Length: 149
Image (cartoon, rainbow, N blue to C red; front, side, top):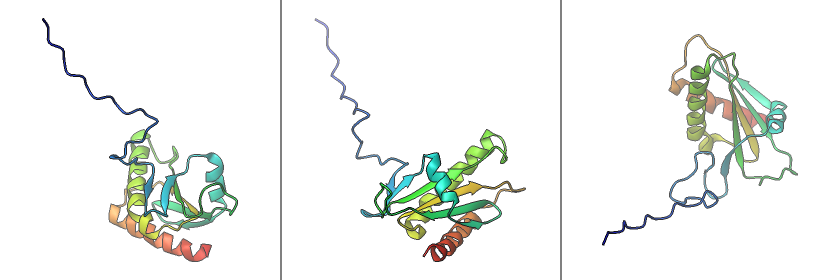
């Protein structure tokens, strides 16, 4: 008689969220301030009508969503744009990874609910260090918070 292998546990379906592992695309500041990623072109274009803060490494746009927007008013959203002017795919992807890390660190403290934040990469001769970019982002968010109120 042959032995049977023990059954393996079933994998969770893609429709059911895995509560042990939080998605990197959606995080929360706390229960009332979720952070989401902007994906639609119309939302990027709407944010382009907002206020801007320019640094050597990036341009930061902020735009308050209208009251009739389907998202809850307490949701913080961000988007990242890096064009081919920056360089090859390796350089663009590196810049996007750095922007995502910056936003993950800074938005929970300095982002404002009910607004969309867009970071647009700018070409520079040398890559700025992370601490300088973080300081620029915090300064930009403080500046835009005053301008949007």
